[in-house]
Amino acid sequence: MKLIRGLNSFNLNSSGCVATIGNFDGLHLGHQRIISTLKNKAIDMKLPLTIISFEPLPAEYFMPEPPARIYPMRDKIRLLQTLGVDHYLCLKFNSEFASQKPEDFVKNVLLDKLSVRYLAVGDDFRFGYQRKGDFQLLQKIGESAGMMVVDTPTCKINDKRVSSTRIRKHLEAGEIQQANHLLGANYQLSGRVRHGDKRGRTIGFPTLNLKMPSHIAARRGVYAVNVYGLGKSAIKGVANLGTRPTVKGIENRLETHLFDFDADVYGQYICVELVKFIRGEKRFDDFEILKAQILDDAKQARLILENLG
Image (cartoon, rainbow, N blue to C red; front, side):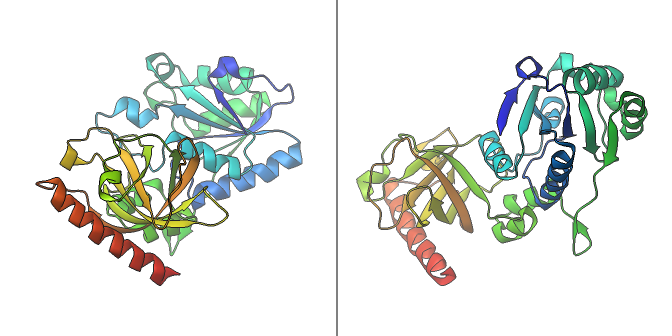
């Protein structure tokens, strides 16, 4: 998959493309079905499949307190690559972009620049200045320009719509298994191992540190985890997601201690699967109390992971 940042970086395919537009936060079962259907259409039409999205997301631009993201950008890209997407076009969402007339967006972006031949969006999709553009406008313009516009079907489980909103609520509550059910995959956060403060080493608990954006939906706290990327199979461990208030931390991190593992893996890319939430993040009065709690957290995580096999 090719990541394309901005229209100026997009090399026009004269034959056009099959496309869809959206946030695709979480890439849940509904998103997967849409992409799978479009991938088959792209193969039939012998055209590349292009996902069109935005940074920041429109809600993050307009809302003072936007919803937290299910995944950081790097994980969205990682998951899109597994789904057979050819192009991920990331457009900068700013005042100039937001002020575009809907007709201009269709003509300048979808038709002139991307040559979209087949477009799938939700029938409630809104776009352009003051959200005046809608599905009907896309169909009307598309009909005269050779762009077929279709709506995306709703994905339901037990008569309930699969949505990013539902998944966020589960993650914010520490309900990992319920979130996984809607995601269609185990929830993982990834990144390259970086140097931290190395406080864990002083108490026999070295950690692998990943920097995380502050606006991630997963509940801050301690988890039993599986880590992938350091061998042929997963390595069990315990992780803390948060800012480490006991040591007056500011940066949001995912710090993972691996059981029965001792190797220098700085710079390596890993995926940390949050298996089960253990407790929320809290500030301790001193480091000794924190140390005792970490020992208990590790014991609980081992039991959880051993029972799961």
